[in-house]
Image (cartoon, rainbow, N blue to C red; front, side):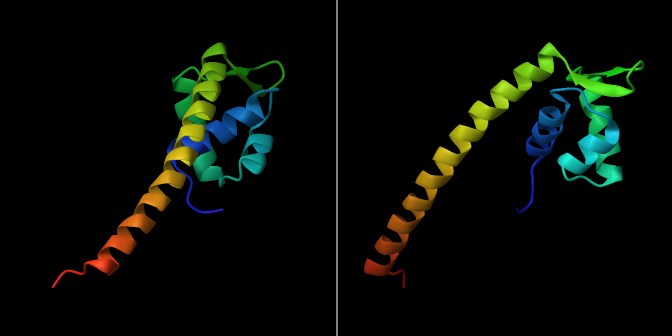
Length: 103
Protein backbone atom coordinates (compact mmCIF):
# COMPACT_ATOMS: atom_id res chain seq x y z
CA UNK A 1 0.00 0.00 0.00
CA UNK A 2 1.33 3.43 -0.90
CA UNK A 3 0.89 6.87 0.51
CA UNK A 4 -2.50 7.47 2.13
CA UNK A 5 -4.23 10.80 1.98
CA UNK A 6 -5.83 12.51 4.96
CA UNK A 7 -9.35 11.33 4.11
CA UNK A 8 -8.12 7.76 3.66
CA UNK A 9 -6.60 7.75 7.14
CA UNK A 10 -9.68 9.29 8.71
CA UNK A 11 -11.96 6.78 6.97
CA UNK A 12 -9.77 3.89 8.17
CA UNK A 13 -9.97 5.18 11.74
CA UNK A 14 -13.74 5.68 11.58
CA UNK A 15 -14.23 2.19 10.17
CA UNK A 16 -12.42 0.75 13.18
CA UNK A 17 -14.37 2.94 15.63
CA UNK A 18 -17.66 1.92 14.00
CA UNK A 19 -18.21 -0.74 16.64
CA UNK A 20 -16.52 1.11 19.50
CA UNK A 21 -12.78 0.81 19.85
CA UNK A 22 -9.96 1.76 22.17
CA UNK A 23 -6.97 3.81 21.03
CA UNK A 24 -4.72 0.79 20.60
CA UNK A 25 -7.20 -1.03 18.38
CA UNK A 26 -7.65 2.05 16.19
CA UNK A 27 -3.88 2.53 15.95
CA UNK A 28 -3.14 -1.05 14.91
CA UNK A 29 -6.12 -1.68 12.64
CA UNK A 30 -5.77 1.68 10.88
CA UNK A 31 -2.00 1.04 10.62
CA UNK A 32 -0.88 4.28 12.27
CA UNK A 33 2.06 5.38 14.36
CA UNK A 34 1.18 6.69 17.81
CA UNK A 35 2.08 10.22 16.70
CA UNK A 36 -0.34 10.07 13.75
CA UNK A 37 -3.00 8.42 15.89
CA UNK A 38 -2.92 11.32 18.34
CA UNK A 39 -2.99 13.91 15.57
CA UNK A 40 -5.95 12.42 13.71
CA UNK A 41 -7.83 11.34 16.83
CA UNK A 42 -7.78 14.93 18.05
CA UNK A 43 -8.98 16.08 14.64
CA UNK A 44 -11.88 13.63 14.36
CA UNK A 45 -12.95 14.34 17.93
CA UNK A 46 -12.97 18.12 17.31
CA UNK A 47 -14.98 17.49 14.14
CA UNK A 48 -17.48 15.41 16.13
CA UNK A 49 -16.95 12.34 13.95
CA UNK A 50 -16.28 10.23 17.05
CA UNK A 51 -17.07 10.58 20.69
CA UNK A 52 -15.09 9.32 23.68
CA UNK A 53 -16.98 7.16 26.14
CA UNK A 54 -15.31 7.46 29.53
CA UNK A 55 -17.10 4.48 31.02
CA UNK A 56 -15.75 2.03 28.46
CA UNK A 57 -12.65 4.12 27.73
CA UNK A 58 -13.32 3.80 24.03
CA UNK A 59 -14.28 5.77 20.95
CA UNK A 60 -17.57 5.44 19.11
CA UNK A 61 -18.76 6.72 15.78
CA UNK A 62 -21.27 9.58 15.83
CA UNK A 63 -24.04 10.05 13.26
CA UNK A 64 -21.80 12.67 11.63
CA UNK A 65 -19.01 10.07 11.49
CA UNK A 66 -21.38 7.62 9.80
CA UNK A 67 -22.29 10.32 7.30
CA UNK A 68 -18.58 10.95 6.64
CA UNK A 69 -17.96 7.24 6.00
CA UNK A 70 -20.87 7.04 3.59
CA UNK A 71 -19.67 10.13 1.69
CA UNK A 72 -16.09 8.82 1.71
CA UNK A 73 -17.13 5.51 0.17
CA UNK A 74 -18.91 7.34 -2.63
CA UNK A 75 -15.92 9.66 -3.10
CA UNK A 76 -13.58 6.67 -3.18
CA UNK A 77 -15.65 4.91 -5.84
CA UNK A 78 -15.59 8.02 -8.00
CA UNK A 79 -11.85 8.43 -7.51
CA UNK A 80 -11.19 4.85 -8.67
CA UNK A 81 -13.40 5.40 -11.72
CA UNK A 82 -11.64 8.66 -12.61
CA UNK A 83 -8.15 7.22 -12.09
CA UNK A 84 -8.97 4.31 -14.39
CA UNK A 85 -10.20 6.65 -17.11
CA UNK A 86 -7.34 9.07 -16.62
CA UNK A 87 -4.86 6.22 -17.13
CA UNK A 88 -6.64 5.30 -20.36
CA UNK A 89 -6.59 8.96 -21.44
CA UNK A 90 -2.84 9.21 -20.81
CA UNK A 91 -2.21 6.09 -22.88
CA UNK A 92 -4.18 7.56 -25.76
CA UNK A 93 -2.21 10.79 -25.47
CA UNK A 94 1.05 8.83 -25.51
CA UNK A 95 0.01 7.18 -28.79
CA UNK A 96 -0.75 10.58 -30.32
CA UNK A 97 2.60 11.98 -29.18
CA UNK A 98 4.37 9.01 -30.78
CA UNK A 99 2.50 9.56 -34.05
CA UNK A 100 3.21 13.28 -34.05
CA UNK A 101 6.32 14.04 -31.97
CA UNK A 102 7.31 17.58 -31.04
CA UNK A 103 10.45 18.95 -32.63
